[in-house]
Length: 181
Image (cartoon, rainbow, N blue to C red):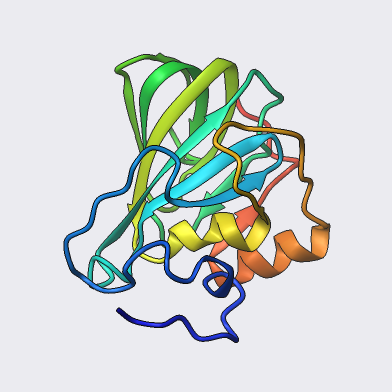
């Protein structure tokens, strides 16, 4: 098993949860690396460490909430698969593609790198997500480690933390962006 470097703040608190190398493993419900981001519980199930830097996978659980600010991932492709519940997703390529779609159980959305997007949980929802390897650590960089199995409380990261994570994970927050609803 690879041991995480103690100086890597996104990995060190989670050392030993995932194998940190490409080998078979199984996680039971709630056994992944968990962080609270705003009012959403993100659980990393698979990271670039286990996939030779190919992709990462996570779940996001949340109750009804406010729309997450518009943002763009400059290098990361991202998917949303609704395991249970309802989530609205806004996407805009800043040219000719503009959409707002409410996804329900079984629906899927793909957000390529370079697309401005945001989402809002419409009722208690679980989403399976996957993206370009390494990006999954973004949730740890902006979140607060937790052992909760359901979203509890709210953690609002300081602006400096959001900015630093955005720089590290090629994500630009665009709170003034207006979607065409």
